[in-house]
Length: 188
Image 1 (cartoon, helix red, strand yellow):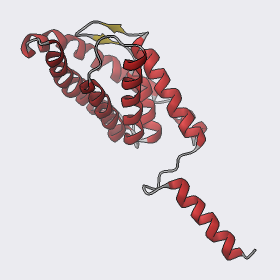
Image 2: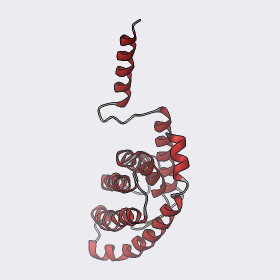
Image 3: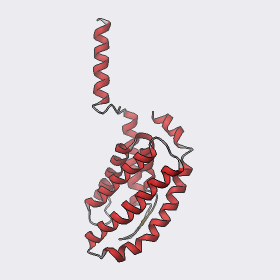
């Protein structure tokens, strides 16, 4: 076989693996993403404090890890699949696609702000958007639609949760920052 033929086949193979976007999907990446989805389900469904209008837990961690390691699209997939599969396998209440949409949007926000640089302003901005716009405003709207509650009083009861989780998430993500480079080396 000629060297030119081998080069063409190698390039074809690389293009097939990379896809149109140029992102490579290795077996290690897919296994890591599946593990993060499973972790999100366990943290969300079994290790969180859940009430009909409040949720306190660490289910954001797998999504943040996916965001830092792989970027916004992968983090959105982890958030969306984690919410959808968790709702199907271990329902807390009726499944509502609005919460899955919020989980996808949160993954996009984490990925947009934290994929390249995990500095304090990026952490604060991403947590603020996720907690106060998506978590507080949008999820409160979904709860009011789902249960027929008034938005205003429900919003007021959820402000304290958002404020507490804001501080917790900023501290945890900042502290996690020194472990992520080692994890990046393993995955890449």
